[in-house]
Image 1 (cartoon, rainbow, N blue to C red):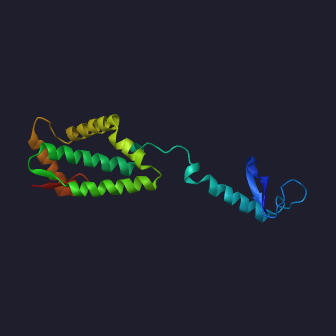
Image 2 (image 1 turned 45 degrees about the vertical axis):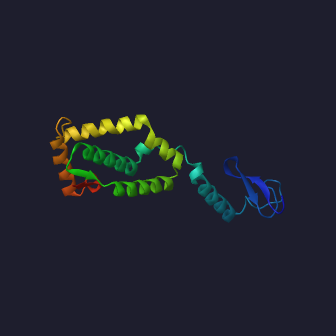
Image 3 (image 1 turned 180 degrees about the horizontal axis):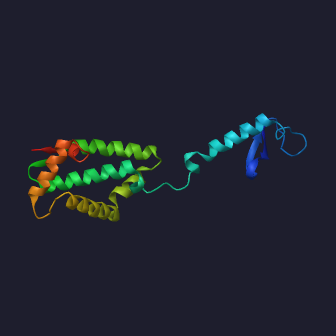
Length: 169
């Protein structure tokens, strides 16, 4: 093996011995050296915590930063569609979408996984239902555009996550 030989480490994993000896063959002191065992344990721990070794990632809906931004954007869009005196800040929303994508990529999600989540009909329906409940709980009535305006202007005044995506016309 050109200067390296494999040997069984803890839990039966293959490890390399740089002096060419295979552990357990009687010619190696690797298992007898406490520093080597500590090093091997440290390497094994590092490898076990690599992103590829991690169990399945949670759904993006379970990542609070992703869920909260998408929810705020959906509410801002709904308000801007139902209130004639409020306009959506589309460039701000686009910038937040790029930041959200970068964040999700940093967590190990691929662009295809992010796109599938954002374009999922079931996720859209879930966010819509959640948004309708939230708006109703905050005094918004779909039969009255004025209630959307009151709520939207209050969010703008508070500089909330929703309000940051809106502006008065």
